[in-house]
Every structure is written in structure tokens, then in C-alpha cells.
Length: 562
Ligand code: ATP
Ligand code: MG
Image 1 (tube, protein in one colour):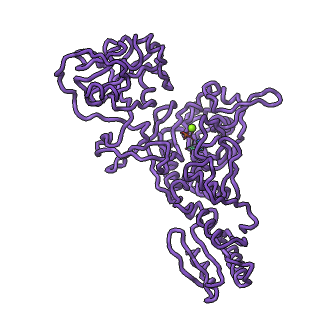
Image 2: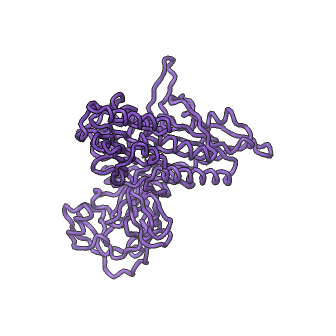
Image 3: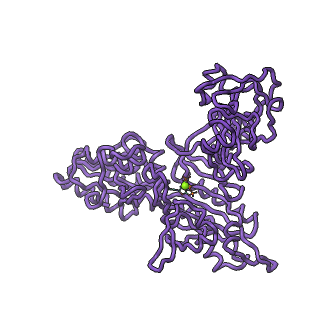
């Protein structure tokens, strides 16, 4: 591709509306442009990156027995009504109607459509397992599109779906897809982690997310440096060590006027925050439910939503509902004498002589002890793990890193095959609902995650397999030197013949401009053709992650093909 004839609008300065490196660099290097909130155009360089990423994804999936299809982006509402998701999905699902008033939505995901395809075309166990994927546009009307293409509204996803007669064949495919995802991220030369993930509302089977490690990542990941244990913090089990000491203090009600936040309470009473508990009231099925945590611990909302009687997804009680249920405002609640169900986190349950709200505005109680003063029958795991907490597999303290979720694989069980009546006949001629698996990778998000992890102060550092080109060829002052022009043209056409993809900067820009653009764009190999080196019959070769050397023009091909 000749730079002069392409559309590569590089920018010297960071654009005003971009804050994180991948967003800034994709804009500055001329890969993307924004059209509206969460809507982006991919320019020639950007499209080439997407194609490269897609190629890696396709190869790793196809060789593991997944086959590519392409389903419509616009989907009939009927299918979503059948799967019972039409009314469950919130405003993320963009709905519309056609000229005949028939309702449709823009695809946020394709379980319904693929299940419909399956039921109309597969009828026998002999056709299983069946593993299909597509690379297609998705639309989710995200409440907060941000970080450029990392969280956009329209984006490209590889989504795959598999159908199985039994657990065993399901597990084999799940494992193969796990390996495919690991292979994809390894080929892209990324520092990544596969973690146990929250399975969501569907089933409690295996679920894994693949995260590209990055400071700005929206997810916190807990892992054990001494074992294979790794889980999204949303999912990671919190373990308690030790047992509850015997009570040693008497109950005392203390006036704490104006003190409601837990850290100001600890300050006010001059006690350790770890000797306090906080009580959070959430909506329950019949009545509100109280959740008790140690003062310094944070509620894990996904875990809390799985507590019996608690509404899913979690909804916090309003101040008015709290006053009605407990008789005081949120800052003074405690487990003592509560008339609503009380669930106590494992770490709060081993405290003794602790402090909590007195269920009376402006008062707290100290010297509280479970059993003696208040029952502690329902102990649950509802807190977020933290750095240094014990790993659930007993391998030592957990570490926490941040990551960008680029892929997610999970079990769907028979949710869709059953609700949409997609049955097949088994070997005995009986009708069964196949088990399904679901496997997603965000193509556009992955491209951005690569940039987020791999850049320096001058620009992007593309891994070989995602780079828009193999070689960035620069001619210096070519309009003044025929030798420069001819040599560069020759390298360009030799590379073309050898199947090497070249971005040829043939513009009549100053050398400094060309070098800055090359640094910004970040293609791993660079060759500079200039008058000075040519006098000795040489061109300059530079590797993005290494130094530069002068080589003979005819050696260029050799450098790139080894
Ligand atoms: P998130 O928690 O980040 O919203 P999700 O759990 O909704 O992701 P899935 O439904 O599992 O994501 O989608 C599969 C993949 O699609 C994700 O792993 C991610 O790579 C990509 N993806 C999801 N939402 C977006 C988005 N708004 N913009 C870009 N890519 C996305
Ligand atoms: Mg999402």
C-alpha cells in the first residue's frame, strides 16, 4: 500500500476526547475515527489489523472443528419471545419495527438465531457435535460506551455455539475452545490470563474469561502465584482463616451523633475497622434482606444476588424501605433484633466483641457477640476478595491484577434448546434437548487490547500476527534522487512478489515526519532508503524492538522471511 494514496490521517497531538493509550493511539495512528457515541469507522490500516486478528481466530477455531457461518444482524422478535428474552433484556437491546409493523432487534448476541438454524436443519444425534461460529457485527446500547472501541455500542465479535448429546462431548469441545482461545492470544504475543468467571444467570457450569492484562482493565483478577488458581474477583471465593474467639466484653449502646460511614465510626470510637460490621439491606423475594459484612470488606454484588431470598440482579433497598423495615436510617443498622432475614458473611461471622449499628438513629452498639447477643445461623460468602487473602486452593495469598476481558466461554446447558424446542433423536430414537456451549471473542476489543498492552511513548508495537503490514518502507527525499526512488520502488515490488505486505511511505514529507509516523503506526520491521547509505549500496534496516543496521538492499527480503 502506498502511503500517499491511502487514507492514513495520523495526528501529531493527542485528540481531545481520548484519555487512555489504546484510544489515543488508534486515533493518532489513523486506524479509527469516531462517528457518534460508541460508533467507529475503521480506516485502511485499522481494517487490516482486524483482518489479521480475524485470520488468527479463524485458523485456531477451524482447526479444532468449528465451522464458519454468517447469520443476520437484524433478528425477528419472535425468536426472542420464544426464548423468553424479549421482555427480560433491558434497553441494551435495540428494538425496531419494519414497514409491516413486525418487530425486530439488532443482534447483541446470536443464541436465538443459531438455535433456530439448528432446529430446522439438525435432527439426529449422528450430526452431533455441531460447532458453528461467525464473525459479525453486534449492537449493544451500552449505558456508558467508553475507552474508544474497547466498549463501543457497535462492535465486531466472533461468536460460536456448539450442540452436544452429552456432557462428555460437550466437555471435549469446551476444552478445545479453551485451547483455541489460549492459542489465539499466544499467537498475538499477549500477556493474558484465563480465569474462572461468573457463569451469570444461566446455570452454574464452567465458565472462563480470557483477559489481556492492562492497568486500565475494567476487571480485577485474583490469582495465586503458587498455583494455577485464577478467577475474576466477581467469582473468586473468599476463605476465612481462624475461628471466633470467646466473648470478653459486655454490650454497650453508644451515642454516635452524625456518624454513619463505617470508617468515620471506627475513627470516632477509636477502634479497629476490622472490629466493626456493616449491614446492607437489599430487596428480597418477600421482604427486604439484611447482609452483614466486616466493616472493611466490600460487598460482591454477584455473590450477594445468589443468596436465597435475594432478588436477582441485586437491588439495594431505598432509604424509605430501610426505615420501614428496620426503623432507622441506613447509617445505624445492625443485625441485633432485626425482623428481616439476616445473612452474615464468613469473615464477619468469626468476629467477637464487635461494633455495629443499634437500629436506632445516632446510636451504635459495642461488645456485640454472635450467639450470645444475636443469632448467626446463615453464613454466606458475599464479599469481594482482596490482595493477600488466602487462595481457595490453599496455595497461599492471592495477588490481584487488572485485565481487559477479550473472550468468554461458557455452558448454556439446555436453556435455548429447551425453550425453543430444538430437540434431536438419540440412538434409541428418543427426543432429547442438546447441551449447548457458547464462545465469544471481541475482535474490535481485542485489537484495542493489543494496543493497550503493547505501546511505548512513540507509538504502537504490533505483534507480527496483528500488524497491518510486515514492513514499513520509507524513502527519504525521493523527489530529489532517482536512485532513492528506484531502489525503494524495487524493494516494494520485490516484496510484493515474495508475498510480503509493505506499507510504502512514498510521500514527499520531511524525514522527521515519516519517522514519527512509522513509530506511531508501529509495524515491526522498517527499511529506510536514503541517499547517504545508498552511496555505499546500503539501506537502513530497523526492528521495532531492537536497533538498526545498514544492509544491502538485496538482503531486505532475507531479513523479513527468516
Ligand atoms: P462486558 O462484561 O465487558 O460487557 P460481556 O460479558 O457483556 O462483556 P460477552 O457477552 O461475553 O461480553 O461478549 C463476548 C465478547 O464480546 C467479550 O468478551 C468482549 O470481548 C466483546 N464485547 C462485549 N461487549 C462489548 C462492547 N460493548 N464493545 C466491544 N466489545 C465487546
Ligand atoms: Mg456487556
